[in-house]
Image (spheres, chains in turn blue, cyan):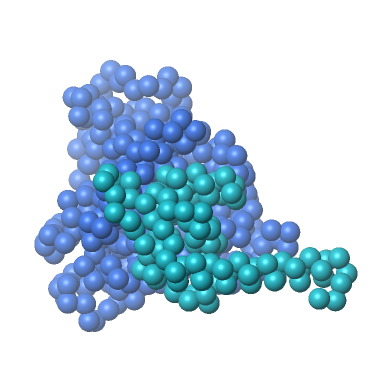
Length: 339
Length: 105
């Protein structure tokens, strides 16, 4: 499963980059996975974040801009989920009630429930929203996609309830009891519910690390999805709750990270200077994407697609910082002097 | 990338250049060497992000390889930039330590 995730992460790099360095990076990741002292998900996350950075670099923004846009949306969506882990009451993720499955709107992280639809999430950072395309669409190469595919991806995701099945044989017996009846969830309609409590969120000193949030959320989200995909490949159907239990087990590795600022502790942590730098980079990417979405000179997109993008930027958003006036500068300035 | 450019970049670039100053290395060897010399664990994505930028700046270059583990080495420019950067760091460290000790440097 780890290698599957790695292959996916490697495919997220721009095609030109993959052509030049993909083989050697893949070899490196294989060497690292063979190293018993290496944490597999650290390799996966580093590779995925590296792909994000490459996608956002100006030299790749001509052919693969929207792929990068979607990828960034995915990462930022994951960040939103991760923030929920850190400021909420534990992971706070559960099987979505059937009554809420048609909910396409994302609430803001201000103490209420947010419904994250992995097919349609939009994330706002400092008031700038980016849409999330299907990750699967990038795995087949964005360049070959027509606008019609994008328009199709923008349509609401249909949910196809399937009858309950016996407990699947996923390697984790420590599944928490779901708060709603367990229900099998097809791969194409995986939803996640996040309950957010901002009681410990006290600006201007931020007590969470966006970097940690991104890394943990990616690992958690990918693990959950992969468990379901593996089950489907084997002809089984697995409930989201069971897949989550397995993901939580893997995610526990993050919580025992030897470096406190990288540890996925549910308790708040201070930002380190390194995390601030990472956050600044995320903001920079985000601002860059704003320019892309508003660009009038991009010959690779049709006006219809531009209109669609613009529309998506203004709705179905979730605010992951939640603090007006947040900038990299005042974020850094708010850090305790001993950091 | 000039020394000024390197100064503005992350310390990862310096670590990669420092590691390569000891001889050509492929990705896995770089990660382990950097971990040993600095205690910093670079992930594969971070490492290749650095290598890509450094190679584009002409500070490192890839060597031919018979397998997929392609080694990298410092270029002449890379060596010069690294020397400048480390010299500058040394000077700052010297001044800082002197000030901590109550000196006037």
